[in-house]
Length: 220
Image 1: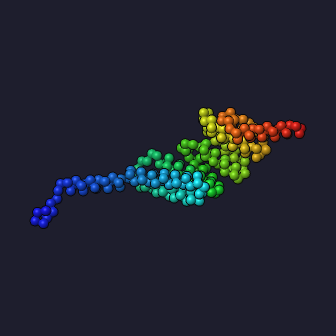
Image 2: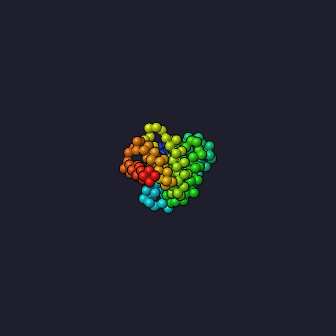
Image 3: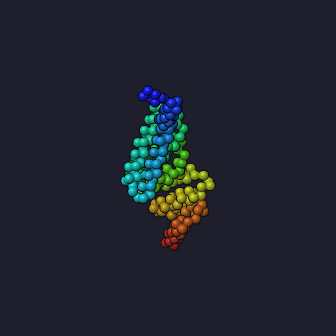
């Protein structure tokens, strides 16, 4: 100081400018979007972990919170008029987690509504997974014809080299066909599953179908 007055150093101006730069960078729309996305993905993971632990109500609560956060992000992007190319991916992930959470809580109408809403969007990259989940819901509701219809729709979207998924879908079809008493079709479904990916469960179901069909033939 000189005469009790503070001498302003050029470095003070640099420090102030840098501090303002950091604040502006932090408040930049692109960085706020990154924070939105990180919060959303963290919450999705938390909801998913709760499903794995069997804490379904908490999973649903968290999934609903994520949907609210996603809508806030959507409003922010619209307000700032920003071109955000991967927002749809975030949206799909959020809605899928919400649907899964409703399904885990046996709230099937709400889950179906969201799975079917995703199906209507042609840009959703994995429709076969939606058909699988919808099929599972109809199985839980004992609507076996609807379950088979959705499993078969899912099969139509599978690539020829996805052996495990082809086996899984056919296994699900076979179980539904057994519930309908259609052992011939069930046998065909299990044989396809066995060719794609052999498993003890599929082998057991094959033996069951052969046994029932043999008994029917003997009775004739």
